[in-house]
Image 1 (tube, rainbow, N blue to C red):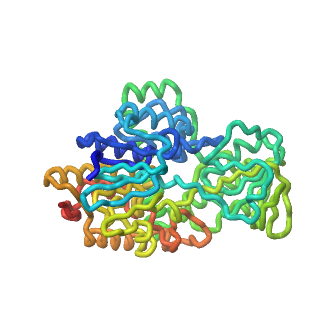
Image 2: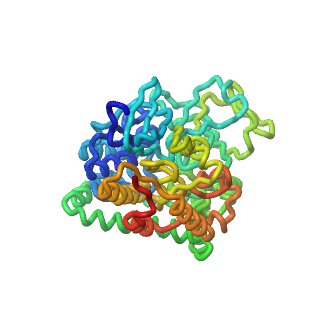
Image 3: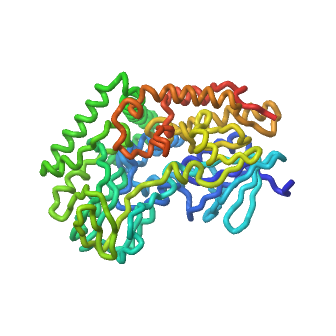
Length: 493
């Protein structure tokens, strides 16, 4: 046995890892190590610093319910405020002292003596009774596989590694990608550029964004009367729940609601873009909800600018000084911006090798046997393991509903472990199969099965064409089950 075995190792110091650490400390497990590969905490809000970065749902819903922030400057807070909020929470709840930065985890192996061995780059090993992975859903950047991209002689910037020292003024740039990141970025950089060509593979549904500054007097009111902000949060959460549950998960019964949102988005597009051909190119050809939509009042008008060009012909190759499309057209550029999002299913489930009981490989198991995780947190064959970013774990549109329902699950589970005086826990095959069957059945009514999603290229779908990222229930159901799942769904020893 190793000399030192920690209570827990948590991999990831974003909001998921912070929440898990807070809950473990509440449960009396204070010997924690939080490993973060980046240079500071915050997860995606540390990695991303591109112009226009902001939360894409109302700020009031994007925070821990037990630690509301009354001082958001806008209804949709800018990214720097989210990073500052993460720092505030980590320090207030005394979990920052457990964090180790620039610590890259290469793998973890279960030891039958009853602990996990976590292997770090450089050869260091840590040992812990519990292993929790909080590596996030949007943590592994996706780089486009385009012929000749390595030959480009100009400046290349990926949105997850934005370099503020680069002066964009007067440049001829191309942006590859038109997802939520690009929707925020493009309106910010377009006025600075001499020319901007946007290469779109898949159009995105965009609805109006009800964003505005929150007056200081309202912020002071929220600070003095927290109930006022809770009311706003409840209203915002209710709207998000309606969009997700009625418009996406219960699409088969509520197509009219989904179509009404589509009409709203199309009217928004028609009002904001002058050229009919550009409007046609910006119109999605898949059902609303197949791909995560976004909100913006500035994205569409950017395409009215004389220096902005929308290109939908596929890219054939990249040359040292330009991009060539399939029809042979070459666009000369000096700056290439990659807004190509994240790689979820190839490298992020899991984000590093996890070997459980009897040599069971988590990544191989998911790919060979179907992506699955009981209540979005546990997998048979992996004792004392909690995966906070798993298949069927993402609940609702706010990541914090996922985080807090998992915190509640962790509380119920570990209290039972302590009550029994157990050393290990492991979800049973029976419970896992029943949960998987229930989630698969619930998806049958969703837009993912009944809508037209073939052209959406959505990260909701894994490489087998199955939408196994989202939990296909209401967030109310997720919270209720997190606090009432049958305790004998786990085996204790």
